[in-house]
Image (cartoon, rainbow, N blue to C red):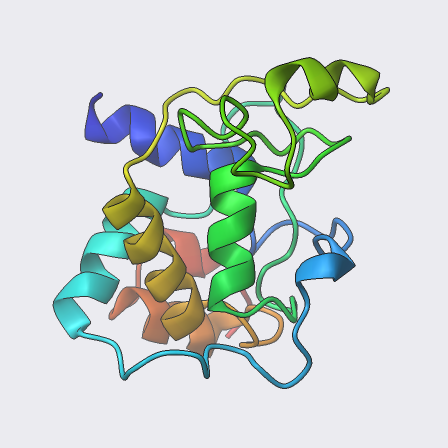
Length: 170
């Protein structure tokens, strides 16, 4: 899979800066546990997670908006579960190739998914566990709990003034 396709995948499903969709499944919310369930993050891992995630701008009008992860209460474990398993009865796909082959996600198998009125789509690509971990680490370090995006946060996020930051007033 090309990096462009991976970027596009995340642009479609996790457009945090631009999205106002409701927060992800309450079953994975751990109050007060925003990223506190792991060791301090390695800067190169966060950078790699950011590369995998993409720029957060949705480019495909056919795909639904993702949840606003800047305001979510999900902790790292919750993010990993959502990325791997998607959200049942929603448009959030599972990025683990085997998510519903053996009951590892919510104890469900592929046949069980047919009972939900909203079927999760196939993802544009699947991810390895290490890639999922890197994306979760990036989200915890740079997105989750950071509040609404503004110009200063945009510049801090990208490390410099970029075209994407120009959409926010000075």
